[in-house]
Length: 239
Image (cartoon, rainbow, N blue to C red):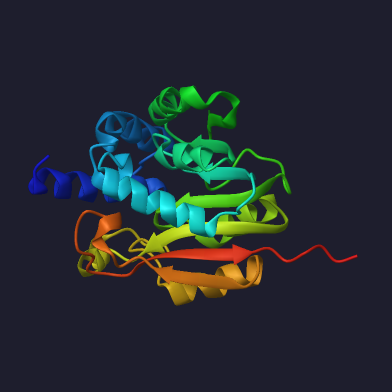
């Protein structure tokens, strides 16, 4: 895929994904259809499919470091084609993935089939996951908050999914800052600075740790703006 094709696809993805709150009539069904159409080429992006062994190893080591060391229940929100779900299952975790796109779900189920019951994937809204409160040890999400009309409310819902002592692990960053003025007025349409996200998550979940992901091995390119992992540990239940 050429650089021009990649840039065009990325720009279109941002426009279409962001428009549920715009005034041009874009619907959730249109957004779902867009990601259904995009699903076939999703894994061709180096940091999506992780087809390069060095990139895959870097992400797996990152997850190994920040997920629990013991087998845990993980909600993988906006799981896409299931690449991260597979890495987490390889680390011994029980993963429940959810994605808006039926085609992404189909591909994620195919990719995760060798893991049997260790990975379950269903179609649903990552901003309002179809899981019971207090039902998982880890909430994991990567590069989804920028698409949400109310990311703070989504984070509130995600925090409610955690058991006491559970972890929220988010991979986020900043991107496209030079084009922010042309984007719909979503709160975090150009991503979110780590300090801002840590302040919100700290209130909702608990103490946060932020790790900057500046190494190009994660992205197969040099990063112009901030990319990071944030880990927060839920407060223990009070008697």
